[in-house]
Length: 245
Ligand code: GLP
Image (cartoon, rainbow, N blue to C red; front, side, top):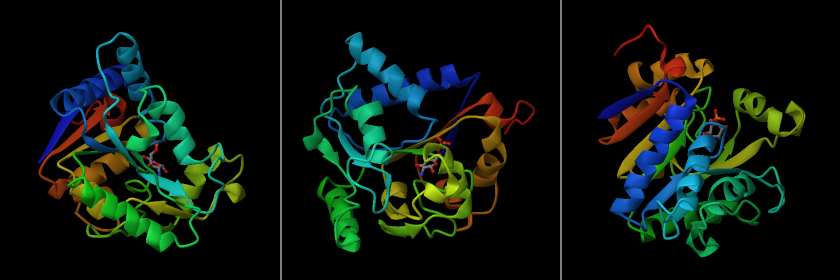
């Protein structure tokens, strides 16, 4: 079932997202959670870091799983999604690296690295929570269309749309890596809870296609309609002021 939380603006979305995560941490301090990068969750992470400074939360026991990563870039490349996650979330929240499962994109055997990731998820008994952003083409992580719900963690070719939307981080479209590793749909959808965060008018069309359109591999996020416990946190401009469900 999808539960929709609409907020007035992005600031309210961030407070609401932080409330949600604080609730998860309070209920299970060592929850296993996959976290996204992208612009949308950044304000939520800042809000969590603020709450940590005020002594309101303790996230140090969280077990963090990386969502996606470009393939074949040096491990310390500042444009890697891991470095982004480290500086935006892991380090500000004081989460020890021993609690973090990283996608090893530099391994000579990426397929084995994917299997190791899925094995690490199994070893903790599955994810407690998938926190996800919504790609402009309906992707989750880098599960590009078409992606089936049972797809495992794997190497993917990025679509032109994803290359275009990520070009701002690389300076130019032709500098964006063409391939990535993504946590599989299977891992993300079988988490005990899913939180999808969506902000901005440019996501309106794909958000409605994901939640109200046909369930199809062509819109990977549409499979969220079949997941038992999904919370969609969206601001008014993303949902559309005139549209009430
Ligand atoms: C990117 C990432 C996703 C992210 C999504 C939305 O391409 N692969 O993990 O959630 O697109 O990003 P944003 O929040 O910047 O819109």
